[in-house]
Image (cartoon, rainbow, N blue to C red; front, top):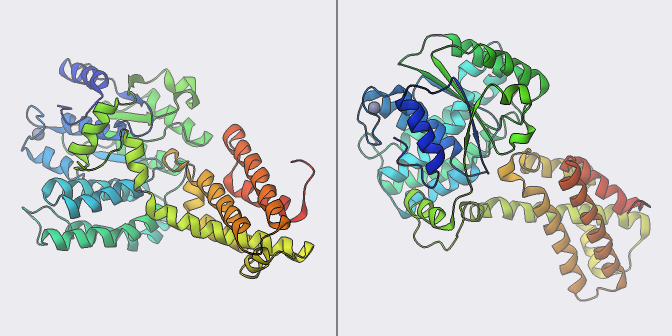
Length: 425
Ligand SMILES: [Zn+2]
């Protein structure tokens, strides 16, 4: 058990020991940096707890088979998360390393998303779920088309094509996920957790347990005070200090570490099936798969730059040619900001894996002004404009990283300061 989790020997050996001695607590906290296999380990634990045999990695029992495809009835997945990069990696794997392993990788990535729309998480709130159901259905059909060779009907090439088509649908579905776990989901989860398991044990995985509103946190605390015996709760976090002590006191901590570059290399080669990459950390590898969203950000940055210049232009009256050209292409600032929010899932929606979105947006916008200053016809006015933007962007970034302010509010604030001028910068 846990053989497939690379570079987390300590956490895995503690878990193995606790399982083998039958000393596993009902509530666990997996604590470690982003992309350190916390979810993979939690899913592996769920499989181990359900297995009818010895839980070997390749166990052929029906329970393990259901877990491997992430369709087991005894698991529940809750919590915000970004799936785009993992799905993009899976779709690439299906093209460059075709076969069952790659198909499983992609299917599991898609299921991790879809399972957050399980009806059991929406009891009494079916109306919210109804809006997502058409997309859920499309994703499920796409998953079927990518089914592994043994059960599937599609050739590798056809399945890979289906997978890449599915990326857009999955992104839309992901946008419908709540950014923090709402209290109704914690209540639905509790109701579900107290029902008898289908097999031996139920596993409830709550990701980003630090990111919960008070009401949800209190509801969770109540469950952890008296957890049903047949259920195991796995909370994951990369910000343990943000979890309240009353919850911390009820969970056993398992520490996940930042992987060494050697371990990261083996994750990239063995799990992502990429021998060409030169990345030496999982984070830098995954970041390369943000290319698609980065392109979108460059587009948004240009629209934003054009909008604020257009608004400022009507107030100031530019004489520099590049500024005038940019201003003429600008739409209304509020409209552009609304488009950016919609197109970037609210600047990554507070997910740590997408925390790069807002800084990248500010950078890209800055790059627009720098290019502008190099254009023919650019004069002092363009240079001053670029400098003004750079100063405002630095201020916005500082407020974002130090005070945790919302990107959308900072984007509006920056626009106002750019257009009307402000004495605070
Ligand atoms: Zn098994």
